[in-house]
Image 1 (spheres, rainbow, N blue to C red):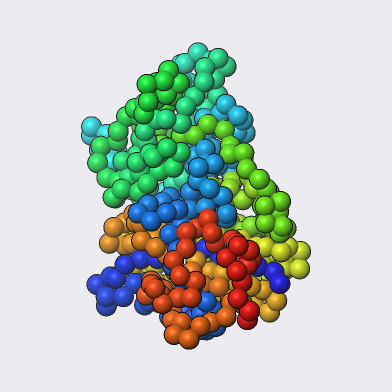
Image 2: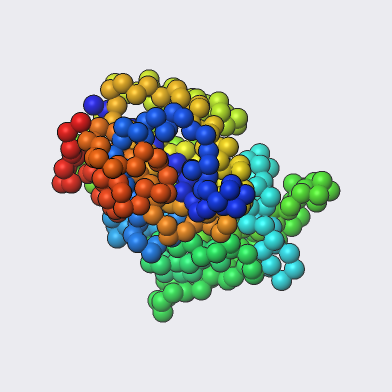
Length: 420
């Protein structure tokens, strides 16, 4: 039986006054997902670990069965997924176009959710930057909306991941970052996190690049137009999750004995999936959410016979969580229910649905709350909650698990698959 793992990015939340004290998952009208839930085993999951508010990258690395101790950082995976060349000594960094004011005060972390088209035009301005550091070159690419990635190479010096983020919304903890608040305040400088020459050099390179980027973006024709239109300027880059090289990990098929493919919208999820040897299933470039969700379901249905395992990552719910819009988050969940789950052919598949982290609208950032998980094909015990939302708590037969346990739980290894 083919396995389909669907990750609803940031879907978990907390009670919202504007939804009558319910979470978006509780409030949304999702008859298809709820029908599936009635026959599924359920539990709660800490995707990276209890007490950790993870970014999506570390959460997905863990959910797909890999230990974050083997991780080199989001930056290299973001760059790899965006098509940049990431070698062993290459420094990779995740970037956000942002709006800053006087004294580098962050006004908007995502430059008013700048369009992918405008970001692509700004990419050309960034690529023209002269760093002025002997032997150091870079390659920058914009990906989706405000997001981008950058890689740095040095002919004679070594880089280090032991540097802080130039983004106060995420604090560096080794090779991963942890979400801490709404990320507003003064754009910080990058500082070394140890006393090594490599970390000092890396911080110098990144701070130089950030300053040059601010200079380049201030005179951009795109920003001149955006000022005229009253839109947020994209006049700075937030940079975080610096890492050196790609993780060296066992391929998914070798580790779990399953041929695997993925459908993902964002660069970092693509990068992680490619790294572990999953085949990409491409979907057309569709801006309209509902049509994009239909296309995803269609591709899952078409590829069930080709692969043992298909991982689907749906970005939709996370963005309104960051924007604090609970109504929109619930509406997007309803669109996913109708246009993805409503089109998904359930015959012959074992379906797991979960989230990579919670993005509470009240916080406008990720939290350390556990996320719901449900799995078809397991025996549903008496008293099993029928709903798929944050109320599952202790009542689910899957209990509380950590993300790295999920794949073995799904395929029935180590944790024991119950008979249907």
